Amino acid sequence: MTPTTTAAGPGSGATGPGVTGPAAAPLRAERVTLAYDRTDVVHDLSVTIPRASFTVIIGPNGCGKSTLLRALARTLRPRTGEVLLDGEPLTRLRSRDVARRLALLPQSPLAPEAITVGDLVARGRYPHQGLLRQWSAADAVAVADAMHATEVTELRDRLVSTLSGGQRQRVWLAMALAQQTDLLLLDEPTTFLDIAHQFEVMDLCARLHEEGRTLVAVLHDLNQAARYATHLVAMKDGRVVAEGTPAEVVTPERIAEIFDLACRVVEDPETGTPMVIPARRPVR
Image (cartoon, rainbow, N blue to C red; front, side):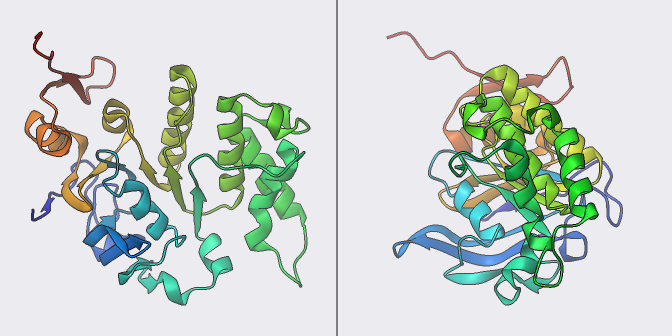
């Protein structure tokens, strides 16, 4: 199927959240094919991440969402095509330079044994250090600011292994924030969290976006995606089938096409964003 691309709505100025196109894109993939063990998962895909957007990638299991995110983060090299960061091919950039411009929160990250919250968050400053630049006052401020933003300052001396799921996810997010990048990529950041902690993490992401960061997240929950995203990318079978605002992408016809799910789409009474209500299955 030929991808359907629609321009995002609010804020569609030259550099606003709804802008598409190379001039407004800090990150984009151009005709990438992504594979594991010579099996193609994503096929000849092109996608543009609008600057200052909160872009959410949705689609059924196995459609290539997380695979695409890995390619955007340079943890998976495309078999064909290329990913561009501010117009430069990722493959031509040094890992440290990429880490100064782009931070990734992977799915279910694992902390080293017996590491404290403070020490884990401090690892986010690694890209900014080198032989001629060791730990500095600026690093300490960046770590303190990241911990304050994620509300984990009081956990500084706790072992990461002793934290709840929601606390642990906020600590990992603090480490990513300590990198002080304008781009933040999150792979299913609410997985394994209860509903209260899910919204806690998503509200934090929304606040980071409001502060000017460009966020890209993979989410399974359609209603969360529609509530928080400014730009949606819908995938199926390794291809992009729709892009645009939540109102443009989350329609009964699109949801049926992408997820094979009959549904109604109503207005979320809290936010006014689209909300998916699955149709009742017939009783047999």
